[in-house]
Image (cartoon, rainbow, N blue to C red; front, side, top):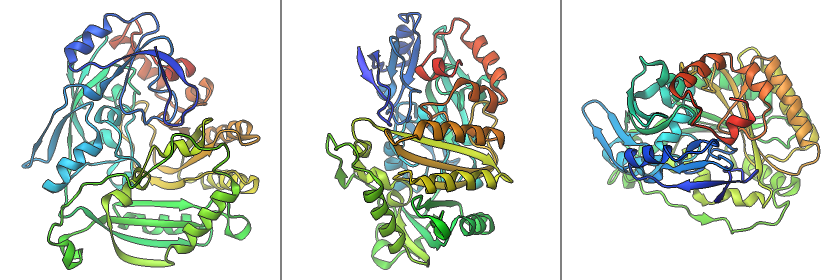
Length: 445
């Protein structure tokens, strides 16, 4: 048995961990499953318990037939589910192509991107990962390999289905052409939350990628002050002369590594407050046309290997919710409560979502999404998040399954309106309940 956690390093559970190298090998392992079931796992970047299966079997799919192919005429990429977006970008970017959607880390697998229907800074323009998938190969509970397209209902039960319909073995998806490995970026500071919302609403549609970092410890008239970062892929003519010699160079590596341990409470009001003040203070009031690399623009935390260790042995909770447009009052209440209570969140980001995919358990919907990284152990945290659950549900919003580690089953049932439809399709594909996870048990899926 191997003790597994999510990226938040909370709630470890033991499971039998196997590493199949082919779909056939994975199918053989399915036949050995006990009543505790099976779940696939990629690089372990789900924050909670989605890729854990206490007492059961976990398939580490990172070695699953590693391969990829690209058709430059169509932009379509076919990649094995175990391939990471990092490895894929390293191959694609020097050839003048970029993945259609990337979350805040490159270190997720293609299979994980499908299972979580990941979103990025371009959701308001390009939706989430599943919108770009043209077909996928799914290993189902009976050991058969099915090729699914968006015309199949099981396809949309799998996109965002958190690995509970089968094992994604391969996916074909559309990529986008780029001229360089750099971004053309505009940076702007806002005074408070109202200005942040106003500026994002008025200007986000001018940019393919946009995000706001919020100083959650700012209070009073500064509450919700932010640094807005918006941009698009730079053209060759946007680059300084020295960069034009190799405009597609891309080989990102971590610059630092977090130590194997960190003292409890390292990230506290004093340290995070100092960081926030420095980060906000050094950001330009308004700067246009900054040239920045892909890695620092999309994946700044990937520059520090094992950065989750900085939260200490107790780990951290990521709380990410979405509320529809028109429910800005709920967003404001959450930020105000967190600010007034001095809750420490090392990373607090706000984005605007556009249209979601037909994925039945897919998280994004048109509206505002706020993500918080909160160290475990802060006084009153559990009760506060329970209260936020109520506010989010009342506003017609929901929580992100790939980030969740503590949502109650009742909230899941009340905020994902297509849950029963998903269950019916899942039950047809897996009548004996072979695919299970700690998240599935916790949320009564």
